[in-house]
Image 1: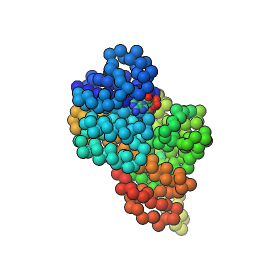
Image 2: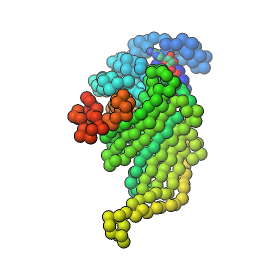
Image 3: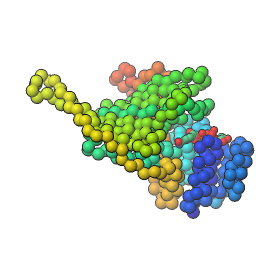
Image 4: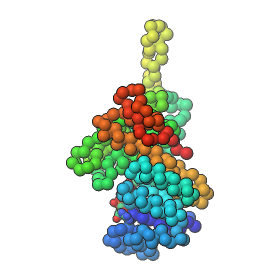
Length: 361
Ligand SMILES: NC(=O)c1ccc[n+]([C@@H]2O[C@H](COP(=O)([O-])OP(=O)(O)OC[C@H]3O[C@@H](n4cnc5c(N)ncnc54)[C@H](O)[C@@H]3O)[C@@H](O)[C@H]2O)c1
Protein backbone atom coordinates (compact mmCIF):
# COMPACT_ATOMS: atom_id res chain seq x y z
CA UNK A 1 0.00 0.00 0.00
CA UNK A 2 1.43 3.40 -1.01
CA UNK A 3 0.60 6.34 1.24
CA UNK A 4 -0.11 9.44 -0.79
CA UNK A 5 -0.99 13.12 -0.47
CA UNK A 6 -2.21 15.73 -2.93
CA UNK A 7 -1.14 19.37 -3.06
CA UNK A 8 -3.48 21.61 -5.05
CA UNK A 9 -7.16 20.67 -5.23
CA UNK A 10 -8.65 22.96 -7.82
CA UNK A 11 -10.28 22.10 -11.14
CA UNK A 12 -7.82 19.26 -11.92
CA UNK A 13 -6.57 18.18 -8.48
CA UNK A 14 -10.02 17.00 -7.40
CA UNK A 15 -9.74 14.21 -10.01
CA UNK A 16 -6.65 12.92 -8.22
CA UNK A 17 -8.60 12.97 -4.92
CA UNK A 18 -11.26 10.75 -6.49
CA UNK A 19 -8.75 8.35 -8.06
CA UNK A 20 -6.48 8.00 -5.04
CA UNK A 21 -9.56 7.22 -2.92
CA UNK A 22 -10.65 4.56 -5.39
CA UNK A 23 -7.43 2.74 -6.26
CA UNK A 24 -6.78 -0.21 -3.92
CA UNK A 25 -2.98 0.04 -4.17
CA UNK A 26 -2.97 3.57 -2.63
CA UNK A 27 -4.11 5.20 0.57
CA UNK A 28 -4.81 8.94 0.42
CA UNK A 29 -3.54 10.31 3.73
CA UNK A 30 -3.91 14.07 3.32
CA UNK A 31 -4.91 16.84 0.94
CA UNK A 32 -3.42 20.32 0.92
CA UNK A 33 -4.66 23.53 -0.65
CA UNK A 34 -3.83 27.07 0.37
CA UNK A 35 -7.46 28.08 -0.16
CA UNK A 36 -9.50 26.95 2.93
CA UNK A 37 -12.89 27.17 1.16
CA UNK A 38 -11.68 24.55 -1.32
CA UNK A 39 -10.68 22.20 1.47
CA UNK A 40 -14.06 22.67 3.13
CA UNK A 41 -15.90 21.53 0.02
CA UNK A 42 -13.52 18.55 -0.34
CA UNK A 43 -14.19 17.51 3.25
CA UNK A 44 -17.91 17.70 2.62
CA UNK A 45 -17.46 15.30 -0.28
CA UNK A 46 -14.86 13.05 1.38
CA UNK A 47 -15.44 13.36 5.17
CA UNK A 48 -12.67 10.89 6.14
CA UNK A 49 -9.88 12.96 4.58
CA UNK A 50 -7.35 14.98 6.59
CA UNK A 51 -6.84 18.41 5.06
CA UNK A 52 -4.33 21.20 5.58
CA UNK A 53 -3.38 24.58 4.14
CA UNK A 54 0.32 24.02 5.02
CA UNK A 55 2.44 22.06 2.53
CA UNK A 56 5.13 21.49 5.17
CA UNK A 57 2.63 19.40 7.15
CA UNK A 58 2.61 17.00 4.19
CA UNK A 59 6.38 16.98 3.73
CA UNK A 60 7.03 16.46 7.46
CA UNK A 61 4.94 13.29 7.66
CA UNK A 62 7.35 10.37 7.16
CA UNK A 63 4.55 7.89 6.49
CA UNK A 64 3.66 9.69 3.23
CA UNK A 65 5.53 7.98 0.38
CA UNK A 66 4.30 9.94 -2.62
CA UNK A 67 2.84 13.33 -3.45
CA UNK A 68 0.78 14.55 -6.39
CA UNK A 69 1.28 18.25 -7.19
CA UNK A 70 -1.62 19.88 -9.06
CA UNK A 71 -1.01 23.56 -8.30
CA UNK A 72 -0.49 26.28 -10.96
CA UNK A 73 2.63 25.84 -13.13
CA UNK A 74 4.63 28.72 -11.61
CA UNK A 75 4.49 27.04 -8.19
CA UNK A 76 5.69 23.61 -9.39
CA UNK A 77 9.43 24.09 -9.01
CA UNK A 78 9.43 25.11 -5.33
CA UNK A 79 6.85 22.53 -4.26
CA UNK A 80 8.37 19.62 -6.20
CA UNK A 81 11.88 20.49 -4.97
CA UNK A 82 10.66 20.41 -1.35
CA UNK A 83 8.80 17.16 -2.01
CA UNK A 84 11.87 15.39 -3.43
CA UNK A 85 14.11 16.79 -0.69
CA UNK A 86 11.62 15.37 1.84
CA UNK A 87 12.20 12.00 0.14
CA UNK A 88 8.77 11.70 -1.45
CA UNK A 89 8.10 10.32 -4.93
CA UNK A 90 6.44 13.12 -6.92
CA UNK A 91 3.89 13.19 -9.73
CA UNK A 92 3.68 16.82 -10.87
CA UNK A 93 1.21 18.20 -13.36
CA UNK A 94 2.46 19.59 -16.68
CA UNK A 95 4.44 21.70 -17.31
CA UNK A 96 6.96 20.31 -14.82
CA UNK A 97 8.60 23.74 -14.38
CA UNK A 98 8.60 27.13 -16.06
CA UNK A 99 12.28 27.28 -17.08
CA UNK A 100 14.93 24.86 -18.32
CA UNK A 101 17.17 25.65 -15.32
CA UNK A 102 14.36 24.72 -12.91
CA UNK A 103 13.60 21.51 -14.87
CA UNK A 104 17.27 20.47 -14.87
CA UNK A 105 17.48 21.12 -11.15
CA UNK A 106 14.44 18.91 -10.44
CA UNK A 107 15.87 16.03 -12.50
CA UNK A 108 19.17 16.34 -10.60
CA UNK A 109 17.41 16.36 -7.22
CA UNK A 110 15.25 13.32 -8.08
CA UNK A 111 18.40 11.44 -9.18
CA UNK A 112 20.20 12.48 -6.00
CA UNK A 113 17.45 11.22 -3.68
CA UNK A 114 16.64 8.29 -5.96
CA UNK A 115 12.96 9.24 -5.98
CA UNK A 116 10.53 8.99 -8.88
CA UNK A 117 9.76 12.24 -10.63
CA UNK A 118 6.87 11.86 -13.07
CA UNK A 119 5.02 14.51 -15.09
CA UNK A 120 1.29 14.55 -15.82
CA UNK A 121 1.53 14.41 -19.62
CA UNK A 122 -1.82 12.65 -19.54
CA UNK A 123 -2.22 12.02 -23.28
CA UNK A 124 0.70 9.57 -23.14
CA UNK A 125 -1.64 7.36 -21.07
CA UNK A 126 -4.57 7.75 -23.48
CA UNK A 127 -5.28 4.41 -25.23
CA UNK A 128 -6.18 6.31 -28.43
CA UNK A 129 -2.74 7.94 -28.57
CA UNK A 130 -1.06 4.59 -27.85
CA UNK A 131 -3.04 3.07 -30.73
CA UNK A 132 -2.16 5.99 -33.02
CA UNK A 133 1.54 5.50 -32.33
CA UNK A 134 1.29 1.75 -33.04
CA UNK A 135 -0.67 2.29 -36.28
CA UNK A 136 1.78 4.89 -37.56
CA UNK A 137 4.67 2.48 -36.86
CA UNK A 138 3.17 -0.27 -39.04
CA UNK A 139 4.69 -0.74 -42.53
CA UNK A 140 1.15 -0.36 -44.02
CA UNK A 141 1.14 3.28 -42.91
CA UNK A 142 4.02 4.07 -45.28
CA UNK A 143 6.21 7.10 -44.76
CA UNK A 144 5.11 9.78 -42.27
CA UNK A 145 4.59 13.02 -44.24
CA UNK A 146 3.44 15.34 -41.46
CA UNK A 147 1.44 15.73 -38.24
CA UNK A 148 -1.18 18.29 -37.37
CA UNK A 149 -2.55 18.91 -33.85
CA UNK A 150 -5.41 21.19 -32.84
CA UNK A 151 -6.24 21.99 -29.23
CA UNK A 152 -8.80 24.78 -28.93
CA UNK A 153 -11.52 25.71 -26.47
CA UNK A 154 -12.98 28.71 -24.67
CA UNK A 155 -10.72 28.73 -21.60
CA UNK A 156 -9.69 27.90 -19.03
CA UNK A 157 -7.52 31.02 -19.32
CA UNK A 158 -4.45 30.93 -17.10
CA UNK A 159 -2.75 33.97 -15.56
CA UNK A 160 0.60 32.31 -14.80
CA UNK A 161 1.54 30.71 -18.15
CA UNK A 162 0.59 31.14 -21.81
CA UNK A 163 -1.73 28.92 -23.85
CA UNK A 164 1.47 27.36 -25.22
CA UNK A 165 2.81 26.23 -21.84
CA UNK A 166 -0.68 25.21 -20.76
CA UNK A 167 -2.01 23.45 -23.87
CA UNK A 168 0.80 22.77 -26.35
CA UNK A 169 2.76 20.88 -23.68
CA UNK A 170 0.36 17.97 -24.42
CA UNK A 171 0.82 18.13 -28.21
CA UNK A 172 4.59 18.42 -28.02
CA UNK A 173 4.61 15.30 -25.84
CA UNK A 174 2.27 13.49 -28.26
CA UNK A 175 4.38 14.39 -31.33
CA UNK A 176 7.61 13.22 -29.68
CA UNK A 177 5.85 10.02 -28.55
CA UNK A 178 4.70 9.27 -32.10
CA UNK A 179 7.94 10.29 -33.81
CA UNK A 180 10.12 8.51 -31.20
CA UNK A 181 12.88 10.97 -32.04
CA UNK A 182 13.66 14.51 -30.90
CA UNK A 183 12.83 17.45 -33.18
CA UNK A 184 15.57 19.52 -34.81
CA UNK A 185 14.01 22.96 -34.95
CA UNK A 186 10.96 24.85 -33.82
CA UNK A 187 9.24 28.01 -35.01
CA UNK A 188 6.20 29.78 -33.59
CA UNK A 189 3.89 32.75 -33.88
CA UNK A 190 1.40 33.79 -31.24
CA UNK A 191 -1.15 36.42 -30.36
CA UNK A 192 -1.98 38.27 -27.13
CA UNK A 193 -5.54 38.95 -28.10
CA UNK A 194 -7.05 39.49 -24.65
CA UNK A 195 -4.37 42.07 -23.88
CA UNK A 196 -2.85 40.31 -20.91
CA UNK A 197 0.77 39.21 -20.60
CA UNK A 198 0.33 35.75 -22.14
CA UNK A 199 -0.21 34.42 -25.66
CA UNK A 200 -3.84 33.33 -26.02
CA UNK A 201 -3.34 31.67 -29.37
CA UNK A 202 -0.33 30.14 -31.14
CA UNK A 203 0.72 28.42 -34.35
CA UNK A 204 3.77 26.25 -33.79
CA UNK A 205 5.80 24.28 -36.33
CA UNK A 206 8.37 21.73 -35.29
CA UNK A 207 10.59 19.73 -37.61
CA UNK A 208 11.81 16.17 -37.06
CA UNK A 209 14.69 14.42 -38.82
CA UNK A 210 13.76 13.56 -42.41
CA UNK A 211 11.99 16.93 -42.76
CA UNK A 212 8.82 15.63 -41.12
CA UNK A 213 6.87 18.68 -40.00
CA UNK A 214 4.42 18.86 -37.12
CA UNK A 215 2.06 21.78 -36.84
CA UNK A 216 0.35 22.60 -33.55
CA UNK A 217 -2.45 25.10 -33.14
CA UNK A 218 -3.53 26.02 -29.62
CA UNK A 219 -6.07 28.57 -28.46
CA UNK A 220 -8.06 29.22 -25.30
CA UNK A 221 -10.26 31.85 -26.96
CA UNK A 222 -11.90 29.62 -29.57
CA UNK A 223 -15.51 28.70 -28.71
CA UNK A 224 -15.14 25.43 -30.58
CA UNK A 225 -13.58 22.66 -28.47
CA UNK A 226 -11.24 20.50 -30.56
CA UNK A 227 -8.75 17.86 -29.38
CA UNK A 228 -7.37 16.36 -32.56
CA UNK A 229 -4.15 14.82 -33.85
CA UNK A 230 -3.87 13.96 -37.55
CA UNK A 231 -0.97 12.00 -39.02
CA UNK A 232 -0.67 11.98 -42.82
CA UNK A 233 1.41 9.25 -44.45
CA UNK A 234 2.13 7.93 -47.91
CA UNK A 235 -0.44 5.10 -47.60
CA UNK A 236 -2.80 6.25 -44.85
CA UNK A 237 -4.11 9.18 -42.91
CA UNK A 238 -5.07 8.60 -39.27
CA UNK A 239 -7.20 10.92 -37.17
CA UNK A 240 -7.29 10.83 -33.37
CA UNK A 241 -10.27 12.78 -32.05
CA UNK A 242 -10.43 12.67 -28.27
CA UNK A 243 -13.95 14.13 -28.22
CA UNK A 244 -15.42 11.51 -30.55
CA UNK A 245 -16.18 8.76 -28.05
CA UNK A 246 -17.56 6.33 -30.66
CA UNK A 247 -14.77 6.77 -33.26
CA UNK A 248 -11.74 8.04 -31.37
CA UNK A 249 -9.43 6.71 -34.12
CA UNK A 250 -10.26 6.74 -37.83
CA UNK A 251 -7.98 5.21 -40.44
CA UNK A 252 -8.32 6.53 -43.98
CA UNK A 253 -6.71 4.06 -46.38
CA UNK A 254 -5.81 6.88 -48.71
CA UNK A 255 -2.52 8.42 -49.70
CA UNK A 256 -0.44 9.92 -52.46
CA UNK A 257 3.13 9.06 -53.45
CA UNK A 258 5.45 10.36 -56.13
CA UNK A 259 7.46 7.90 -58.25
CA UNK A 260 9.96 8.61 -61.06
CA UNK A 261 8.09 8.59 -64.41
CA UNK A 262 9.81 5.81 -66.41
CA UNK A 263 7.89 6.56 -69.65
CA UNK A 264 8.77 10.26 -69.84
CA UNK A 265 12.28 9.81 -68.54
CA UNK A 266 13.08 13.52 -68.12
CA UNK A 267 13.52 13.49 -64.35
CA UNK A 268 9.77 13.93 -64.01
CA UNK A 269 7.60 12.30 -61.36
CA UNK A 270 4.18 10.74 -61.52
CA UNK A 271 1.79 10.67 -58.60
CA UNK A 272 0.25 7.43 -57.38
CA UNK A 273 -3.02 7.78 -55.51
CA UNK A 274 -4.30 5.05 -53.15
CA UNK A 275 -7.97 5.32 -52.36
CA UNK A 276 -9.27 2.65 -49.98
CA UNK A 277 -11.73 2.33 -47.15
CA UNK A 278 -12.20 4.18 -43.88
CA UNK A 279 -12.06 2.16 -40.66
CA UNK A 280 -12.62 2.93 -36.99
CA UNK A 281 -10.89 0.36 -34.78
CA UNK A 282 -12.24 -0.12 -31.28
CA UNK A 283 -10.24 1.92 -28.77
CA UNK A 284 -10.33 0.52 -25.20
CA UNK A 285 -12.50 2.66 -22.92
CA UNK A 286 -10.11 3.71 -20.17
CA UNK A 287 -9.66 6.91 -18.19
CA UNK A 288 -6.21 8.30 -19.13
CA UNK A 289 -5.73 9.97 -15.73
CA UNK A 290 -6.47 6.67 -13.96
CA UNK A 291 -3.89 4.95 -16.21
CA UNK A 292 -1.41 7.70 -15.37
CA UNK A 293 -1.92 7.38 -11.59
CA UNK A 294 -1.75 3.57 -11.78
CA UNK A 295 1.49 3.86 -13.76
CA UNK A 296 2.94 6.19 -11.08
CA UNK A 297 2.04 3.75 -8.31
CA UNK A 298 3.42 0.80 -10.28
CA UNK A 299 6.71 2.62 -10.91
CA UNK A 300 7.02 3.30 -7.15
CA UNK A 301 6.36 -0.39 -6.41
CA UNK A 302 8.68 -1.82 -9.04
CA UNK A 303 11.31 0.93 -9.43
CA UNK A 304 10.53 1.21 -13.18
CA UNK A 305 11.24 4.44 -15.02
CA UNK A 306 7.93 6.21 -15.83
CA UNK A 307 6.93 6.84 -19.47
CA UNK A 308 6.66 10.56 -18.66
CA UNK A 309 9.68 10.66 -16.34
CA UNK A 310 11.51 13.81 -15.27
CA UNK A 311 13.73 13.80 -18.37
CA UNK A 312 10.72 13.63 -20.66
CA UNK A 313 9.22 16.50 -18.65
CA UNK A 314 12.48 18.42 -19.02
CA UNK A 315 12.50 17.82 -22.80
CA UNK A 316 8.98 19.23 -22.85
CA UNK A 317 10.13 22.34 -20.96
CA UNK A 318 13.10 22.75 -23.32
CA UNK A 319 10.76 22.73 -26.31
CA UNK A 320 8.37 25.18 -24.64
CA UNK A 321 11.32 27.49 -23.88
CA UNK A 322 12.52 27.24 -27.49
CA UNK A 323 9.02 28.18 -28.66
CA UNK A 324 9.14 31.25 -26.39
CA UNK A 325 12.49 32.16 -27.93
CA UNK A 326 11.01 31.91 -31.40
CA UNK A 327 8.06 34.09 -30.36
CA UNK A 328 10.37 36.74 -28.98
CA UNK A 329 12.36 36.70 -32.24
CA UNK A 330 9.28 37.24 -34.46
CA UNK A 331 8.87 33.60 -35.40
CA UNK A 332 12.51 32.79 -36.11
CA UNK A 333 13.47 29.12 -36.33
CA UNK A 334 15.19 27.95 -33.16
CA UNK A 335 17.59 25.08 -33.66
CA UNK A 336 17.43 22.23 -31.14
CA UNK A 337 20.65 20.62 -32.34
CA UNK A 338 22.21 21.29 -28.98
CA UNK A 339 25.46 22.98 -29.86
CA UNK A 340 25.62 26.67 -29.29
CA UNK A 341 26.93 27.82 -32.64
CA UNK A 342 24.60 29.85 -34.81
CA UNK A 343 23.39 27.49 -37.53
CA UNK A 344 24.46 28.15 -41.12
CA UNK A 345 20.88 28.83 -42.15
CA UNK A 346 20.58 32.51 -41.32
CA UNK A 347 16.90 32.03 -40.47
CA UNK A 348 17.85 29.58 -37.75
CA UNK A 349 19.36 30.53 -34.42
CA UNK A 350 20.70 27.94 -32.01
CA UNK A 351 19.08 27.36 -28.66
CA UNK A 352 21.74 28.71 -26.32
CA UNK A 353 22.76 26.48 -23.46
CA UNK A 354 20.72 23.46 -24.47
CA UNK A 355 22.00 19.93 -24.37
CA UNK A 356 20.94 17.46 -27.04
CA UNK A 357 17.21 16.98 -26.82
CA UNK A 358 16.62 13.42 -25.70
CA UNK A 359 13.57 11.30 -26.44
CA UNK A 360 11.46 9.34 -23.98
CA UNK A 361 13.43 6.78 -22.01
N1 LIG B 1 -3.06 16.88 -17.49
C1 LIG B 1 -4.14 17.57 -17.82
O1 LIG B 1 -4.87 17.20 -18.73
C2 LIG B 1 -4.48 18.82 -17.03
C3 LIG B 1 -5.75 19.40 -17.11
C4 LIG B 1 -6.00 20.56 -16.36
C5 LIG B 1 -5.01 21.11 -15.56
N2 LIG B 1 -3.78 20.51 -15.54
C6 LIG B 1 -2.67 21.09 -14.73
O2 LIG B 1 -3.01 21.00 -13.33
C7 LIG B 1 -2.44 22.09 -12.64
C8 LIG B 1 -3.55 22.81 -11.86
O3 LIG B 1 -4.50 23.27 -12.75
P1 LIG B 1 -6.01 23.61 -12.28
O4 LIG B 1 -6.78 23.88 -13.50
O5 LIG B 1 -6.49 22.57 -11.33
O6 LIG B 1 -5.76 24.98 -11.49
P2 LIG B 1 -6.67 25.59 -10.34
O7 LIG B 1 -6.27 27.03 -10.21
O8 LIG B 1 -8.11 25.27 -10.55
O9 LIG B 1 -6.21 24.80 -9.02
C9 LIG B 1 -4.95 25.00 -8.42
C10 LIG B 1 -5.12 24.82 -6.91
O10 LIG B 1 -3.83 24.91 -6.31
C11 LIG B 1 -3.95 25.67 -5.09
N3 LIG B 1 -2.63 26.21 -4.76
C12 LIG B 1 -1.92 27.18 -5.41
N4 LIG B 1 -0.73 27.37 -4.84
C13 LIG B 1 -0.68 26.52 -3.77
C14 LIG B 1 0.30 26.24 -2.78
N5 LIG B 1 1.47 26.88 -2.74
N6 LIG B 1 0.02 25.32 -1.82
C15 LIG B 1 -1.17 24.65 -1.83
N7 LIG B 1 -2.13 24.87 -2.76
C16 LIG B 1 -1.89 25.78 -3.72
C17 LIG B 1 -5.01 26.72 -5.39
O11 LIG B 1 -5.60 27.22 -4.20
C18 LIG B 1 -5.98 25.93 -6.26
O12 LIG B 1 -7.00 25.32 -5.49
C19 LIG B 1 -1.76 22.97 -13.69
O13 LIG B 1 -0.39 22.64 -13.74
C20 LIG B 1 -2.43 22.55 -15.00
O14 LIG B 1 -1.59 22.71 -16.13
C21 LIG B 1 -3.51 19.40 -16.24
